[in-house]
Length: 327
Image 1 (cartoon, rainbow, N blue to C red):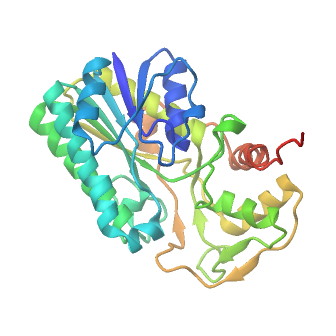
Image 2: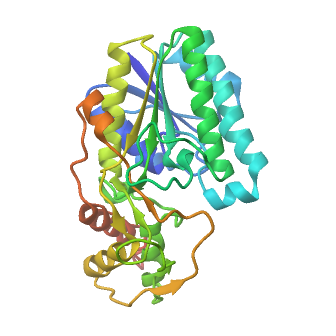
Image 3: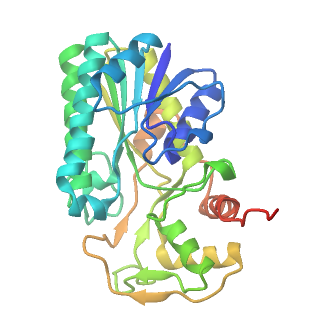
């Protein structure tokens, strides 16, 4: 079978595309390259430049490559931006998904794997977040992901499509330096950006009800995340029309922001103490995944720790910000 990976030239998408292709799956990527980078993909993976909002482009790639399954990662994903631009997020994330699903139904594609997010849960006050924890998103980004899950499941049920929704926790690291995250929106690259400019990293809030007062998060290496997509895609391929599979993807291990800052200092050698600033609205004291269901359903567990994430991300950061040779 052939898998279409939307957003497959992005940070996460390129890892997923490479993992699936490297495991022998046939893949094709559709990406508008608004944030994706064509050079992240090896030559053997076809890249079609196009938007999900362009139905002709979507129909064309499904037909030309005889697509039988879709891994849908393309989306806008900055929480703060979604608060400022909710119409844009609903249009691109939900209307784009609607166009894609309509094309999938018309083409008779039988498997659909959706990139969701732990943002669907909002800020639950629980020790571990299970897939049964109520989903109460607190920003437009999380809302579009939750509504996307509803739409994917309803379409799958109505048209006999095997569906899966993968709820990512905090993604970090890189399998190779050239695949590293180029944005400065997640906490590890935010730390790198500050220390690279000789500034102290920022920690938002040290008065949470946690052991050291800073927020506790579950971090997952992007290469482990890619392996989880491969396992989920293969499950859908084995059980076409078998209903929906909704799973958390994390490590089930909490790491505080202060612990993370200490590890970044150790790995990078930049030991400027962080500055403490006020809490950001909407940040939970603790958000750690329960990973029992994905282990039981897919036999998958994460294998890389936070040190692996920080070290590989730092290597990628240095490679991307190394001065160009003169002459």
